[in-house]
Image (cartoon, rainbow, N blue to C red; front, side, top):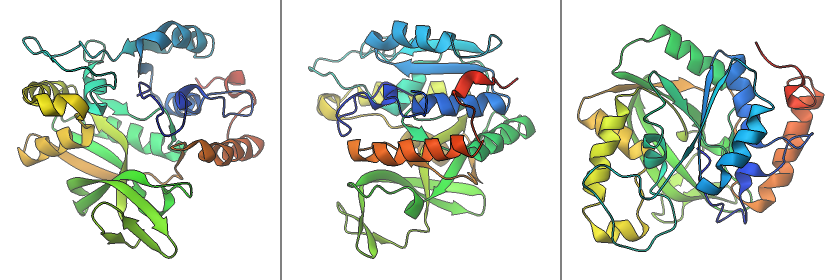
Length: 293
């Protein structure tokens, strides 16, 4: 998903050159996914970015990898629905996924373009897909809260409740911040010890999710107030499916270190970590010099 507007970062962070040779952060995700058997890349973005991304990625991705660059359009809504408010911001992460409904026909992973998830996370996701053929079984790659914070400001995290490997719920906390020796959600006042498992929006889903998203979009569009500033979030959609017993969700440890670029000041850390991994041999320099097969 690369359709965000980078309001806290200050520009389109999805296309910031963070790698040692000017690579975008999402290129490392693509590389890791391809290296673990994924063969179809779908990028959801804004209309103005489509041609740029197609040209940029086609020269880098292996010839056997299918590429679709999809526009997340405000007007792309379920038949019979519409909106009457002025709005520029996209309808949310669930709508972004729904935008790709025509090109996705099998199980798929969902990630953010501005997050680095780690090589092992893609291996674990691929192993899950290979070993689980049931349409009713989804997965969430989990990360430890204390390892996903920014020193430059608050972050939004989905705090998971689980029963063993089985996900019970994901509760969105939109203003979590490290304060001295405490981790606090500034909105609710709740404190965390940092060992909680959180969602970083790395999901393994099935095409059955598109029907659920469509229904949720229809309900969302009936309220003019939510149309103004609201969004349809992917974790909320998955949670609704859980509550309706339509799916079960397995929580898979990512076995990886996450980092991202929520704020502009996060950039230096991301650049340093990508350089360190490349220097250590985890990635080629430039990234696509040795294309995974």
